[in-house]
Image 1 (tube, rainbow, N blue to C red):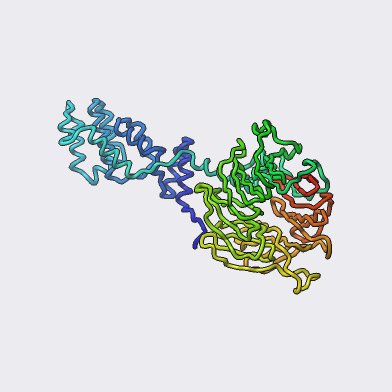
Image 2: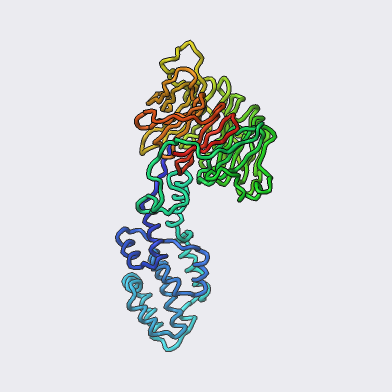
Length: 521
């Protein structure tokens, strides 16, 4: 199945033509149309344009069609009608000028000499007779026929399409972390105008600590793609939105100011934002899945039995219409946000599925399980396309059980590179692998005991690879060289996970010591 979206070069030219027209750059518009042979046969509303024709607003109509490429027959009908109505208003000299000096009537004279002579006679008559002009028709009928003929050759296109598409592109890049948040951006240079963090740096200190209650701790956390929010899910069922700059609860959200928090009846063990950062999905230990509107705290959708066990991960589809989840019940599933139903199930792992995510083409799904296997699935047919296990580190032997897959990260893609993934397993080594199971590169802490990785994440541009170890240490690897550049203690009790801010050199880590830490260089 083809996945490439082809854009016709003529469509790009039309976007520019519309921009030139709306900017009143008529000479440039005309030259570009003549040089390319592409014409702007569009209006903001065909219905409104047809109304202009039927109401005889000829100045507006002629200005619009001057930028269009209409059939000769249609143009002749239009100009003939304009001339006739000039005669009706006794603008005889203006009608004669139109007949003699416009390119449309010059062409008309060559192809329809008899009709042209008739128009000349009408211009020379001392009075206006509708029967002579319209013969067996009327002015209104002629207008209606011309309106229909022109409407058939035009299409309705919203205004400012070029600027709209550029805005959508920038919004998408912001959501993907490709643009810095809240800063001026130079569109031409494709760079921030001011204030951009020059390079990615690894953290060296705990800048802020969000401390949970004595009987609580965060089980999961995530930054929003737009970089505004840090959300946590805790063992006592609460979902809280934090200001990552201060480490304080975000009281600008009215529901949090009123202590009406988002919550589940059991531990919240997975959270994920939609790509536009407006929606939050949360999964609980009892298999319930909820979808929230972040701005209001309202639950927009609920799946009471999304799984028969704890939900371990959540991933939004590219268009934000589906949720992919993994679970302790050995499955991954796709749920429809519009239908409110579970639509697909991926079954084949032998034990807990710890992670599941969509591949970039959104037609395939990758899962990682405590059985030590990674599986690639067809998202539509639910067929398993590939199954593989990462190669064992040298210090492990084949007689041991395969180490559990803790989490998987999509590798940043450059140009025509194949899709690849980082696989973090319960070892002290993380691997970059192809989707058919070939190990491309490895990063290792060097510890043979007590330092297995429990979770991993990438910096936004992929320059740093961070692995949290069971020894409560953060290992900071330079992605390009594979060198371990820095280690730091991040928790006193079991570390659960880490996440990176989409735009800034800020990380979050959370663990069983009841702390959600914010790490900075």
